[in-house]
Length: 280
Image 1 (tube, rainbow, N blue to C red):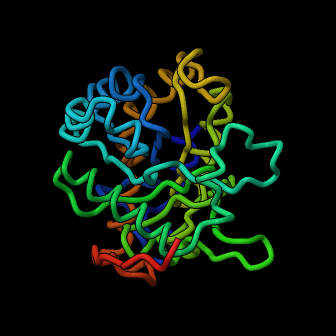
Image 2 (image 1 turned 30 degrees about the vertical axis):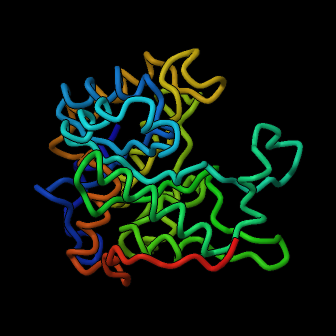
């Protein structure tokens, strides 16, 4: 149990580092792809419990489907995270990404084209929530563009326009001592039982760190096989609400800015500077 792990830890055990209000760990719930269940069910329920999260929405589909509903999500205290315009991914292996439109294969992207997608998605999201600072959720958890034999890392590119990038599927707790804002790493929560999810949170508490959970659908039928059981999700968020004294459940952008503000990160919050395309 997290409360057991926390009982024997000081909030200053990690090189003098502290979380807000004396909490011992941070938790970021992140929801991908701008699904109807996110804005209709998940975001209101989290707000009801006093929790806030990050919703990584595809600007071309998730946002345009109902922009006013997403404004309500932001107004409830949640982050609308950048999930690019067209959800590009690496078509590797080819048989694993049969759904991907070849036009959006990251193997064929230039840095300029990727920057443009991030920039325009940021602009569209600002029209909805009025905010300049947000995090980026790497599509398909991929962290490089360009050919396999000469890839371009996405972390530095992401930090040109976003506060942080969730980055690869790493199944590791983020700690202040090893922080890389451009490639945070996260756990995949889809299909997992409650005990597995809480075990990761317990590990974050023991390390005084930050656990980032990636969730797609919530409940059967909300995103094919990529979903977290609705009963497991409800149990998770209720427990997080009950443990707000020890666990800071907050959007990725808020946790990243807290770390930057304490000087725990080598990178500063980036300016929202436009970068001209480099040819597609």
